[in-house]
Amino acid sequence: MASNALYKLKGRRDALLHCIQTKLPGIVSAISGQWTVLRRNDEETGPSNTWFIAHSPSVLFDDGKEHEAYVIAIAGTNANAGSGGWEENLGVGEVVDFPAWVTSGITQPPVPVNYVDVVPAGTYVANGTATGVHTLLSECCLQGSASAGLTLYEYLTGITASESTRVVFTGHSLGGALSPTLALALARSGALKGEALVYATAGPSPGNSGFANLFAETFPTSPSTCPETPYAVWNRNIINSLDIVPQAWCTNPILSPAQNMNNIPPIYGVPVIPLVAAVIFGLKLSANRSRTVYIPLQSCILSGIKPQTVPGTKTAFMHDALDQHTTFYTGVFGVGSPELECDKLTKKTEEEMFLEYPVIGDIKWVEEHPAEVEVAVSALQGE
Image (cartoon, rainbow, N blue to C red; front, side, top):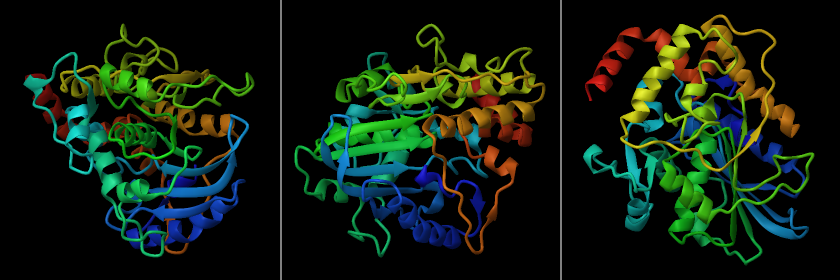
C-alpha cells in the first residue's frame, strides 16, 4: 500500500519524485517492526514504476520466530495512464521463453519468442511483464538512498543474508504480476539469498501453465495460519472474486473456470453492457495472439459482495470495478494507501485514475480511441 501512495496525485515528474522521496520514509517507519527505506526507483523511470526496498532487523513471522527481513514493494498504478493501453495490454500479445531468459542472464533484456516457435509444453511469461521485471532489475537507486548507484539486481545479490533472513516480494494490481515474476526470475537464476516469500494481491496472470507450475514448484504455498484471516498465506495471489483484473489474461474457461476473461462482462450481473463485452473480446484477441494460454498463479480467492444494483452503463461498470479492485482490499486488510499532500501536485480526476488499471483502464481507453481500436482489431483478426 505504501508503494501506491502516489496513485491519486499528478504533476511534473520531479515533483512526484520529490513527494514520494520525502514522504515514504515516514510512512514506512510507522509500520511496526523498525522498518527503514533502503532503496527507491530512479529518476529515469519516475513514478510510473514506483518501487522501494524496506528493511527491518527483526520481524515476527508466522513461524513464531524473529527474522531479519527485506521487502521489495512494487506499485500497481500508472501502468497505462495516458498511453495506448488497449494495444499494449502489458505486452500479453507476445511471450518470452522464461527458462531461456533466465539461462541467458536476467540482467539481459528479454527477447519475445517468434509466434511460430511457441510450443504447448513451453514455459512462457508475457513480454510486457518480463520487460517490466528487467526494468526493475536494471534500475539504479536514487542518490541519497543506501547503496546509491547499484541496480536492484546488484543490491539484492550483495546483501549479507543468513539462512533465517526473509526476502519478501509484494505488490498490488500490476505489482501483483511483477512481484511474483521478479521473485521467480531471481530464484531460478540463483541470485537470491535467504528465504524468499511472495505476497501478491489482485495481479493478472503473468504467464502460461508452464510458468504457473514453475512458480508453484519454486514457491510452495503455506496453509492459512488463522481461519479468520484466510488471506494470511504466502506465495498465492490474494484476489477478490469480483475483481476483474485477476480475471485477465486467461481466455480458456475450461482450463481456469474461476479466473478467465469470459467472467468479466457479466461479473456484476446481467444484462451485459455491450461496450464492456466488446472490449473484453478485443483483449482476448490480443492475449490469443501470443499463441499460448495464460493460466493464473496459485490463488487465494476471497468472496466479494456484488453491487446492490446491476451497472447499466460503462461508467457504472468501471465504478464498481474500481471499487472491487481497491476498496475491497482496504477493507480486508484494514489498511489502505496513504493519502499524500505535496506541493506542486494535484489530485487526479476519476477519469485519469480509471486509465491506470489493467483491464479497467482498457475499457476507458477503448471508448476514447475508436479509430485506433478498429485498426488494432482488424490487424489481430488478420493474424
